[in-house]
Image (cartoon, rainbow, N blue to C red; front, top):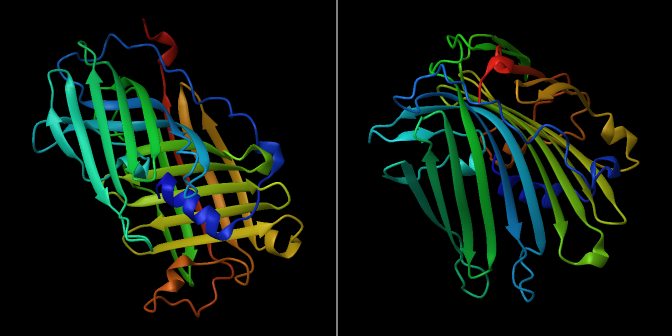
Length: 347
């Protein structure tokens, strides 16, 4: 689920945030392991750790469609492999950068672009979003940098992306990379149907933190998001997220979970205003996570206690079984990748 959807969903179902998370970024979203000279310099193919920062600029003063400034940071383990065009493409967990881009090879990497056209508004104006991304691999194919931008016209919204990465294995399989220790597990119950998945091989594992504030300083609005994402080699997804919003007089916390396996696709959202104890107790969340130059991991249990307060957004479509209770449904998902010998890397 993209950051745009995150923020849109937050606006629709949230009116507030826990002040304890506001105002500063968590530790662990900057810094990378030193380059491992033992890895191949023949090509960038392999598993990489990347860190990124994304920023939006305030739109024009007269624009009231999006009066917010957003800053997001990610740390991800990803794969780089050659696509059908022979371009070594960087795969990410961030959904906004996982779309079907047009790629053009360059001497040191590739350029990617995507044009999206939205729906016309009441005045007949149709917004268009142009996204550009340039990926540059170092001459030794063991490190990379990337810069991207996303500009929407005519509303004036602009986003910039900066990214750095280092190769941590020549293997393209998380399960077989000798430099890494990898694990994954998913245990769930959905509408009475239970399942266990313990053999999924990662395509990417990522953690993301984002913060959004309003350009209207007197409003005191702040919104934060924590997102934990796993995609397997067949693009099946496990994701958890915590949203918080504080608009100055109302605070809301929101929890969510998505699982997409061969047998089930489901999504849950639990959004509660401060002081709504029954709503807050309707979804149980326990979490352990790690974010550093050595490891990315999360182990999260999300359980539906009272379906009265937990929404399945898929219920908006008539073919889903939204009339059946989800009380007792749970998703315990875990994913972990550790670089075993990162302290021995030489610069």
